Length: 187
Image 1 (tube, rainbow, N blue to C red):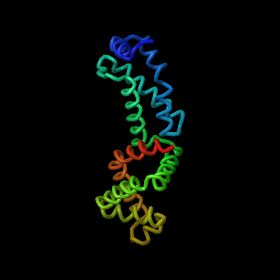
Image 2 (cartoon, rainbow, N blue to C red; image 1 turned 135 degrees about the horizontal axis):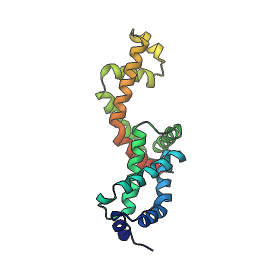
Image 3 (tube, rainbow, N blue to C red; image 1 turned 90 degrees about the vertical axis):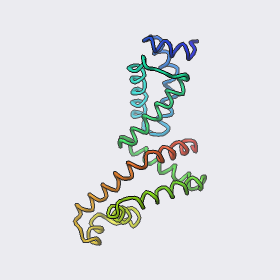
């Protein structure tokens, strides 16, 4: 069996045999990591394939000591990039809801931390966007109802909600990663 060091050295030299061995050795585990988070087998396969393509195209600059750790971390990073870019399926968001429920029941201290973070985010959100967000998400009002209450057009409500969601997307990536990392160990 070829050692990791030999695989790394072979990859740097452009050995297709070392690349094939790396692929055979780590593909399944990397896929499980991606699929465990995304819950979308096709998307998980794409993520793993992209990591291997990147590995091959950047083989000359490969500066790693632990190939397995590097590959698994690359998969996690790629998964979070997929989530950040909004390419995750509805299964992912369903899974995120399940994780949140698990946190509430089994890890209330962690849920409390996330809740505090979200409240701080709401406090820092532009006032008009925050108002629309809270009416929509916390009071379950439709855009039409919000527009009537605030005496603005529905289009204005849509723009403010879009702004609120962009704000969340920009600020949630780090904490979403924490939720997923802790949450994936719960099930």
